[in-house]
Every structure is written in structure tokens, then in C-alpha cells.
Length: 376
Image (cartoon, rainbow, N blue to C red; front, side):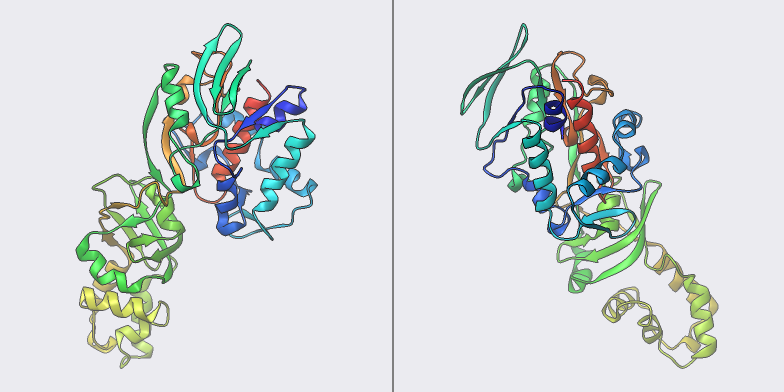
């Protein structure tokens, strides 16, 4: 996005990619269909030490503009849930869109080329690369964060930032599955592969989406979202029936089906395996007629306010993004240029701007790329 934007302005642009395959994260995203933006995208969908930093770029290049670009290239897409837009066919279409735009803008791309040394000069930068020496007036670092290392992710952006005296905030994996304490995993592990709609909350933030039980712990959209707000040692609270007043519903079921077993009744609104596992663990049993109002209230309380303390997260290997990164105080919010080093720009995931799940991080990539591309 940055290269094409600059190229259309008549700039001579070279994109250097250190891996063999360009756009691997794009190709991997969205289950191979690339969740390329979100129609509800706004600054409220991002975490940052400075929540105002992302406003300028997002306002000047909103989701509607990328959608128009997708439509101009004839790519068919659909809304999945909560404003998330996916290609109907393949994420390859988004990569091809970007490569085509770069071609039309006269951008040159080279792959399998490592940047080994960067030095500032009077009128720009001198680069020593595996493909030889290069010089440029402006240098844009768009190498992402630490997530998905097998996709080519490295700490390159952070190393360059530190080289030029820019502050880099602590980083950690985000939008990532939780691992569980051995005692919790023991009874939850057999549920691996089952998904269930939940509301999950932590530190005052709540997400209502699907949760997936895994052989390591918990995953699914709701868990990935809340992982960005979780800190080691925190508990998370899971509401297994976010759209149902379970206490009142169980009372009504008791009136209608007094002889029915609790597990049988709950299996009508939840996976039978999940009901069996959780009821056995929490020692909930008996027919509805045998359960007093007080007992039904206790059962409902447990299902609505299930407290779990994750042991940790799966880490960068499976994380979709990196939380933290280059301190936004070091950059211009309008141009993404480093305040301490004229001509040096940082865009995308390496900056301390982290989006929610659902296309928001791609939209930040497009918007920050355009902001820098208009300024180089």
C-alpha cells in the first residue's frame, strides 16, 4: 500500500522482501480467504499506549476506501460476522491486487534479499543488503511484529528503531489462544474441537463470540479477542449462556418437565458432551423437581460466571498479532515518520497500534501504509 501510494506520486520505489514468498501473512489470513478489513472499523477497535495516534491515518484512509479498491479489481467478497469482510475465493486475490497496484505504479520488488546494515547519510540512507549496496532518500520499515515466525516474522523493525534511538515498548503475543492449568485441562481437554457461543470478560472488557475448546486450552474468536486484555495471573470470566437467563429458564423447564434430568434439559441448549463434562466437574445432577430455587440459582451462577485462570498463552507461534512495539510518541501520526530521524518511517504491526480480531489489523496496515506513502 505504501509502495503503490508513493509510486503513483512519481517516486522511484523499491520493495525489499527477505523471504522467497511475498505476502505470506496475507495468504495465511482468514483461513485462506483474507479478512481484509471490517466495515465497522474505528479507533475504538485498537489498543495503544496512545489511543489517539491511529485516528489520523484511519480517518484519511477508512475501510470504505479499501473496499472500493477491492471492488475496482473485481474481487467478490462477503460479510461473515460483525462487519468482517472476506474474499469469496482466495486471499491470493488481495495479494494480487497489491502486486498489480505496485506494477501500475512502477514499483520494483525484490525477494530473498536481506538488509544487513542501515546507515543514515546526509541525504538519506545507505543499505548493505545480500543483493548489494543501495541508497534511498526515504526508508519505510513495514516488517511487522513477532507473530507467526514461520511466516517470516522477525524483530527487524524493533532493531532498526532502537538503532536510531527510538523507544520500543514491551511486546507480547496477542489474539492468541490460552493454555490452562493442568487441573483445568484435565477435565476440559476431552472437549477439544467443540465450539460454543460465550461472553468472556477480563479487566473490564468483554467480547461475545464463539469459544473453542482445544487440547491445550481455549481458543476461538472470543478468547483471541480477550487475550489482548489479559495479563499473567489474571482470571477470565466466561458466560456460557450470554443470551439466556438460565435461572428463569430452568425454573420454567422445571414447571413443564419436572421429571427431566438437569443434564438432559441443558443438552437442549448446549453440546451434550460439554453439559456432561461441566456438570460432572461442578457436581450438578438430579431431576429438575429435585432442585430447589436456591440450587437452580447456584447452577445458573456457575454457568454465567465461570472463573478460569489461564496458565499462559500459546505465544508468537500461533498469535495473530504482536501487542506493543515502537512507541507512537516517536512517530508523526500524520506521516508515520520518526521524529528523531527524518526520512525514516515505520508502519503497520511494528508500531504500538494493535487491532481487534476481524480485519482491523489489515485496515491499520492499509491506512498507515497510505499515510507514509503520501509523505515519503
